[in-house]
Length: 480
Image (cartoon, rainbow, N blue to C red; front, side, top):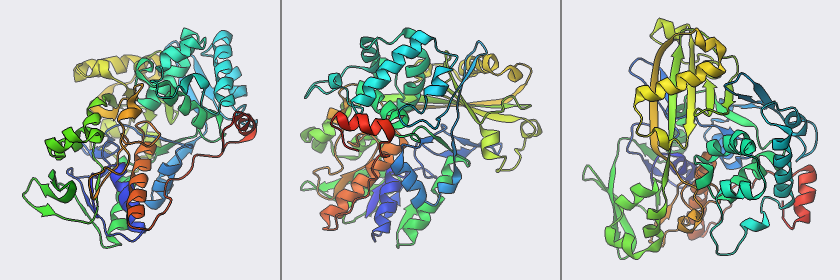
């Protein structure tokens, strides 16, 4: 068994198949595992994530993968969602003892960053989403392309403040795309699964270690079954003979053969690894050209003193969407940095999703923009000195969840003999998230097990519906 790609899709498929008794060789061209959800060390000694990634309580398969990788104890969950605006106002959302979907009503009612008109519009649409079990009728036109989330929100009477300060704040971060380019069903799914169906679906899980350390157990799991992890190994081409994979050729000139192959690389990379004539004659591959990418920008600040007490903040009315207090989250577990000023201060990571407007901006322009926004929402930062900073642009961080994109997302079985596909861009039912990547890995593993006459269910179900949400959803014809 050969898995090409050491991101979450490849790791999850490899670990699941190793558990089922397969000997897996995992190939990764970079010197570390994790793909786009990883970390590395700066020359000055600091560990940085290429972009801060979080999980939610509704991400059941990602949680299962962390268990398999022995990393579950490296994720800390938080119940409070703290919001901050440049005008100094703060707000907090937290689940109460009320049954779903009413569990957020107390904190939502007192949330200071929205007017009563905003809250009324949001509440009415939340009721519609709940009553439809997350499947509103106007998004279920058979064979049609669904509307984008922005148009759908306006159609349902959302105020501009509700759109910019609530729906957009959550969805742009969750889906890495602007509302006007997002399939409305994906936006609805976020709120149904994370905030309405189950009281714990919204809980934010943040790694307490650099991301690369989450995957240490994956190598051990593969090697325990006689498998191997090969880093710095670049695959050049799939060798295809009579519509079946005959092997993989490396840049070094080496070739490897196996009974099964999982291509767990980005969709544009896969096209480069396949013979062009195969791509042209198979729509499942040719259609991948219709998927577009969306960028994420990560900004890392080291201040000479503490400027933030919360573990993380969600910002409104700013380009920056999240601030993560890495000093608090890590607990300085990596030891003090070489720079004494950094060691006595505080390290923050900022995240800007769907950052197309910043792709052409210089590093300094991005630093200046984010520093202004940080000093607006964190008064202590106004007197602090920025000791150092770095900017990480992931230009092709995810595929864009545009209306109609599901038409182009292939299933795990590729119709090329011996080749299976994994990646958040495959047909998982989820957008481009870590949960979607893990689901894709499990689906590819399920397809291989079925092909070998050993059918096994690996994909974990969503969180169960609870309380009034369960009652209302069943009345709508849904099933928990």
